[in-house]
Length: 144
Image (cartoon, rainbow, N blue to C red; front, side):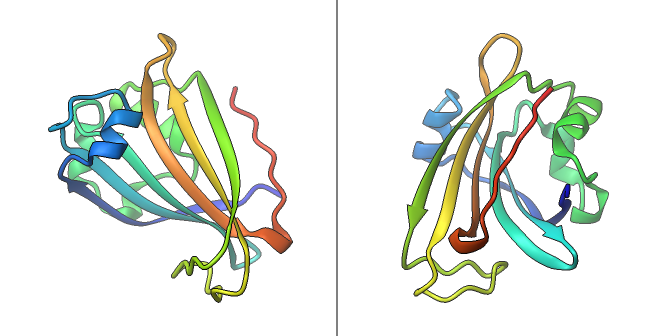
């Protein structure tokens, strides 16, 4: 099953030293911040936090959550001309993290997936942290 993506929050935020370094942008550069959930059969399966360089995604600064499409990577291209050609992911198991969208308890382990998506030149254009319940976690991705 392919989950449905629903953007819950989108905003411009000040630079974040850690995120800006991951995106390989200047330490004072503003970011676009997105919170999104992935839903299957009316249940949130994945909770995501996404950071984008504001300079590359300027049109997103004026969008409302309802304006976003289900699939973000095609939307990045049509709205901002940003083409994701590859991604590097790292998975972790985390404890003692409560996510407001997953409705989990501190006793439930989560899987955390950190992704850096890159353009054709190999430059980072998105940093994403996704959380899902470890006991129900299954993950498959096709970025074509």
